Amino acid sequence: MACTVILGTGIISVSTAYYLSDHQPPSSIHLVESASELFSSASGYAGGFLAKDWHVPAAQPLASLSFEEHRRLAESHGGKEKWGYTTSTSLGYAASTEKKSGKRGDNWLRDGTSRADTAPEVIINELDARAPPESAPSWLRRVAGDHIELITNDGTTAQLDPLLLCQFLLQECLKRGVKLHHPAAALSVSTDVRGELSSVRIGSTVSSTETDLPCTRIVIAAGAWSGRVFQSLFQHSKLQLPISSLAGHSIVLTSPRWQQQQQQGGGKCHAVYASHNTDEDEGGFAPEIFSRVNGHIYLAGLNSSAIPLPDAAGRERTPILPGAIAQLRETARELLGPSEDGADDDLEVVREGLCFRPVTPWGTPIVSRIPDHHLGVGMATRAGAEGGVFLAAGHGPWGISLSLGTGMVMAEMMQGRPLSADVGSLGLR
Image (cartoon, rainbow, N blue to C red):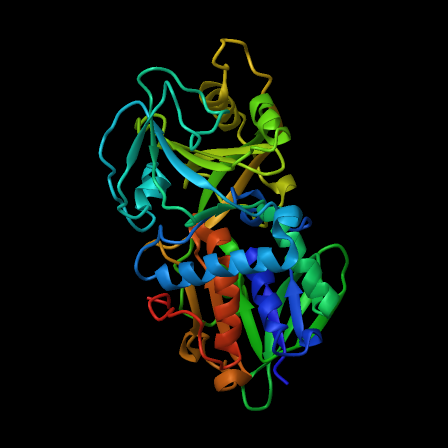
C-alpha cells in the first residue's frame, strides 16, 4: 500500500486528501501543517470567487473541471448552507468605457490591473448607473457618469466562503480516517536499501517530539512556502521551484443595504471589479468586491510583491500594514456608501487580513510529478503509482477556483488512474 504524506493543509492539500481517500485507505494519508493556525493564509483569506472560463488555455481544462466539481459538491452536501456556495453575477464598475485590456497570465495581478481583464470576450452590456436593473447590486454606490458593465454569461461564475469550504473538506477527511499532524514541520526524508523514498520525519512545533511517517509518495502543496519545503527536504537538488509570493490585503465588512436585501429574500451575490489605479507612486490597485450569502462583503485587490514572505503562515507572524487597510476602508466608503439618499451607511469591518499567494512567472499553477533526477543525488522514488514526489502549487488568485479540480487530478495522477482534465501544460518548465 502506497502511503502518502501531503505537506501543507490549505485548500489544495485538503482537496487532494479528500479525493485520494476515495480510492485508498484514508489512514494511509497524512496531512502535515506547520502553521499554528489552520488556513491562516490564502486558503482562509481569499475572496472565494469561482470562474469557469476566465483562464488561459493551459489552465482551462482544469478550470472547467473544478468549476463543475464545485457545483456538484455543493449540491451533494448543502454547500449553500455550509460554505456559502452560490452562483453570482460579475460586473465591471468604472468611470469610463475604456476597452478591456485583455491581459492574460498573471500580468494583470502583478501590474495592478483587473482580474476582469481575463474574462472571455463576451458582449459587454453597459447598464445605466442612474437607473440600474436587477443585475446591479443595491449596495453598490452609483452616481451619474459611472458605468456598470455585465461581464459574465449566466452560470459561469460563483461565490463561496473559502474558510468554510476548507473546514468542511478537512472534517470530511478526518471523519474518513485521514491523519492530521498539526502543528508539525517536515524535517527530512529517508530512503530504503534501494535508495527509494521510504519515510518523512516530522517534528512537532510545540514540543521536541519527532515522528517518522512511512511513505512512498509526497505531495508538496504548501502554497507560497512550497519552494522552501522542497529545498529543506531535498538539499542535494539543484532545482529551484519557480514559485514566488504575492501578498494581498483584504477586509470583510457588512453593509446595511446588503443585509436588508438578504433579509427580504432577494439577495443575489455579485462580484464587482472596479476600475484600476496604476499610479507608480501608489502601486497598482484594482478593487475586487464580492458579496456573500451570509451578509458579508469581501474587498481586496491591493497586492504587493515587496512584502517578504514570513517564515510560516499565521496571523501572529504576518504584519498587516495599517496603511493598506486604511486604503481599503476608504475604498469601501467610496464604493459602498453613502446611500442614494445621501445618508451615511454604517459600514462595519469584521475582519482584516493579509495573505500570501503562490505565483509562477508564467501565471499558471504547477500540477505535476517532479522527475526523480530533480530530487538530487542518492534520492529516487518507486515507479508508477507506487511512489513519487508531486507538486501542486502556484495557483495565484485562482487557488479556490481551481482547488477541487486540482485535488481530483492530483489523486488520479498519483494513483495511476485516467485524468479528468488535461494538465499536460501545467508541469515544471
